[in-house]
Length: 306
Length: 171
Image (cartoon, rainbow over all chains, first blue to last red; front, top):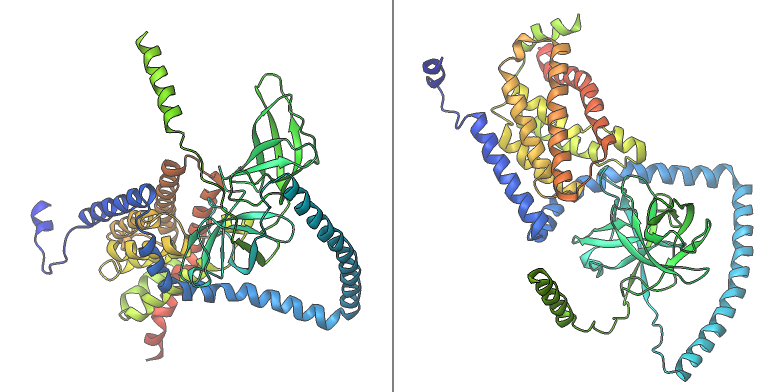
């Protein structure tokens, strides 16, 4: 067998096994570099220029479908459109009244803050983006939106819709950017319970579109239907924007922590348009904690010696 | 019966043009990029994988492990997965296809499909394992994709054979 295999009319390069090993090692190397050091972001955005035409074309059926739906709504259900218009008018008047109140409250708040010399809560500006594609991968809760580096989108910017936080920009391409949803596994958002101001961190659970409050003591004051809003403590998310609603609280004394399940209030699945927040006020720099950490380390070492 | 007919006809097939191969891969990338959501995303067959496997089985010297790897890199960019994740899975897949190429003539479509299922499971496990190593969890429903990809194999095979056959029939 050996002699027949080595005898070849045509030279066709190395055997499949050699090729497999070569490309497998190359992939593993790339994986390691990408997962560890993230050196390849520029390569990725360069290649994305080649891929994006296909992606744009692939997004057309969805857009067409939606436009077709819109067309039939405008053609066949004119009366419902009029009703919707009325409803929106009513909502607008109601909102306008509340907005006037908000403006007076804001002025009052500013005055009071001036009195006690607290820094003002800064405003942020927003940018409207459109979802190009929904999640592409079973594992990742991500969407791609249609603005990127060319529209001044930066990594780490917060993305919301009209009711609450949707996620964060995690990768920026020239004309696209990638938004990781808050339901992504282990994605953390610092929150506050609106009812009592209790601070906590809400984590995404990955495979379902749910969130969970971890490390909440069994005795913590959390109730079903509590609204969770951002606390703004990390400086990434602006304070006071709704994130989720508590749907289930399980208190089992056998475990040190209560298991709290929440549903996000914003739905990236439902809307095509999202807002990217920019010009967030920068927090004052965090004081260096190195010395304290060193002390702890030293103490631990001395303990070990003893 | 159509199985034997395909095998018998395969000998008089005209050579495949590079454009046809390229177009099939592009269309597969397009199909993968359609807005699949929720349950449909989990049930989505990996069109690129099936097309690559087809060419690796039928024309291993035209589209082999190296080109599959390159397509995998593009799939990584398109899916925003880690660099090399799809590439590794597709290289393994292509290797399976190239190995199977030698035995292709012995099998009818049904036997081929069982082999394809094995290769698909292998490629999907490679992808899931990389994800598990990096992120520490696996979504088991992801493996539904290898079933649907396998189910896609026979129709795709028949379709491609028919498309490659057509010009010969006209003569």
